[in-house]
Length: 591
Ligand code: F6R
Image 1 (cartoon, rainbow, N blue to C red):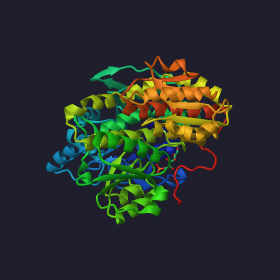
Image 2: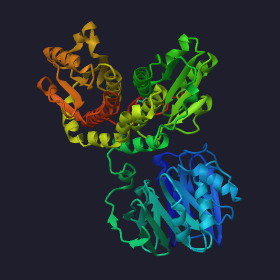
Image 3: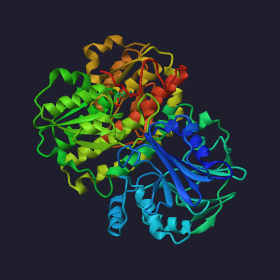
Image 4: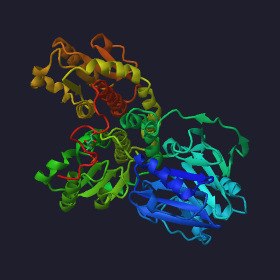
């Protein structure tokens, strides 16, 4: 998730912008840049890595400027790809968050008219389009430009010849800070709070003109008024968007993450070129931790929908078997793209003859350089150590890959695609039950052990639910296929071991009810996660977590979000340090 900051006022713009960008560092970034208007010229710096001490960077004197922290999406992390981007004349500078989905065709069109591009980014087309439309009125040029853009954007633009910024928002946030004789525009509130707590949240379709000491907002070409609100939060609270922990904020971001990931790969049809799978007779997943659980769900989906046999390997164990892989597609799933065991397993899979595909959240990470093919999840940076939104984004990519591999026609898969399209709404339906989930979590928080159970796709759901619970609440949580309980784990059950059961609306439902009755006979407290219309289960269990009803395949999303909330609120009730659990790191770069 990139960060934007723009300033116009009486202070040195470079100093304000760099300090504002530092306030957005929590969002994660790989490069950054600042442009300042100085004597009718744009002065620019771009750098890789962290900003560090702002005092060491002086761009130029000037009271208007824009800046950006970039989390790479189109084009690798590099100084050239860092924002701000400029047009051919160097007079127009642009910073942008979001994705311009038609940038390739716009770029070809602009190149045919003589524009020369220096970066691989989608953003640069915006600067060149503005250049074409600019006839002395920046607002008019930006208005015409956004009429040509498809996708999502928050952008701020500056022209060398006037102390004025023009900003536009569509499906990517922008907030204006209104100080005394100064204005600061940013993608998030923490960037603003050092200067003012009075803000205006822009709405989709808004166009904002910032002048010295004044601003105007337009929507559909007409001037509109938006409310000025006062932010009551401290900067630290604001970084978390008002949530107590990053983990909770990231869980609440899931509907948007699903939208962004679907936006990347699903329009009328699934936009994934699966030529990488041509001629393969089996798939092997390699991954660790939560990504391993996503792989288990991927196995379920690919075997069920595409009928291709699938193995799932812990990356750290794969090293020791090394099977022949000449007709194998090896799919590495890794949020960070830097997990040492996964990288090593990918290298071995390649040596063994496999074709490799990486499903990764971090653009330009090592996994993307090893793999033959890459599919990106669009979760944005995840700050909390426990993976939540990145896991759900992995699942969304896996649904699309499995459907594409299935060879179903568009009309055959339309029902499933329709459900995927409403998945952001379904997840919002899970989040609406947060208060009930919190109440159950508080009841569970005194126990030292838990058992998660499921059948079919419910097994990896249970495994991921148990992992979330143990890593952040430090409660020992095991996950088992419900049918395995009798083969040993039953001995652990009793009134001090609550059981969390995932019930999916498929052929496993009735037999799961039977298993729940057996568990209840051992006096364990049972919490069932099930569809909102399941009237049967509450006869047998102590607590029910209700989620919107979906096809059983999609319960991996709805149930997992509910179990993430259950783990979060249990850990919170126990007073654990949720975002940084003891002994764990976000990126595991040693074997
Ligand atoms: C658990 C968690 C870890 C990671 C694992 C793999 O919440 O985050 O289990 O899933 O370390 O990390 P990546 O996906 O970066 O390879």
